[in-house]
Length: 362
Image (tube, rainbow, N blue to C red; front, side):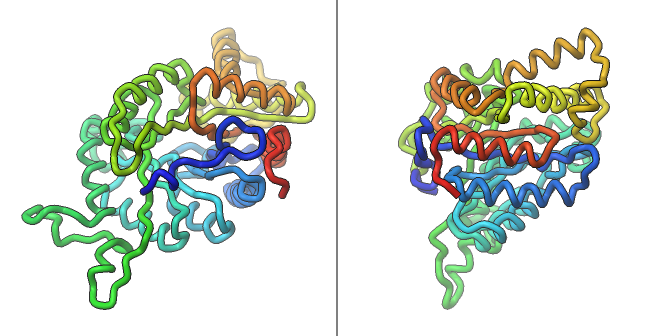
């Protein structure tokens, strides 16, 4: 990975590059097929309007989130786009053998050379029981505690550079660098760049020590954003990858033509979060369902707190909110996610944000 593969270029009047995080959300009355088709439409829109990268995130056992297999989705998106960077935001490494991830992302790199990002997280992306089923073990803490070792192993598979005497020295991730050492082989100029993702200080510090780019989940851990970014910058050690820190933050944002409609949409998305946080995961409810729902005092407090960190309103209001967030955090890139139930509403939101910043026309 080079710094050029990490650092984007701000478009229009945006203060930093703008990117997209898609959770492939499934709304009431729709299917996973509908959600995946919307993801293709959104990736194409993002590419045509100058967004820098498009990531999908690994989640499991959540009816309203159809992104359990990032590598599969990314392969599909690669076939329907031409230029935009595609990646995982992220793959939850403790759920997988590092060799499998190296093979999957080596394949993606072969399908879309120079366009693939490998973002890695240490959380399970689900509840404990599902994590146990994924990992076929009840010792879940081991996966998180072993994350640095798993990361080192994955990196060696990606670079094909296990030292002599290592038990994996003769094992190769294919597609990968080993093909260049075979008779007649040609070395690919690209290797999927690794990002570390986090919602606390652990990955911030690890990314800093390794000199890797860092992505922070501001959209669900807003109170930790500035402490984690400060820790990353203060601890950063230059590497062959980066000479200085580079941090993006994920931010929930929704722009609509009328402010009232934005409030309706984010309230519905917040009801989905209420159900998820109380062990009742389901499809993303409609605004009508949210309007008819009787929130308890505790649920109402959660919704107000949750939506306080969602930048929503008219395009001008969203632009002002994003500008303020970037100034407060010093983020090098903003990765926008929208969990509004209406698929057309989500697509329209990204169009409005692009227009508000004068991004290139489609």
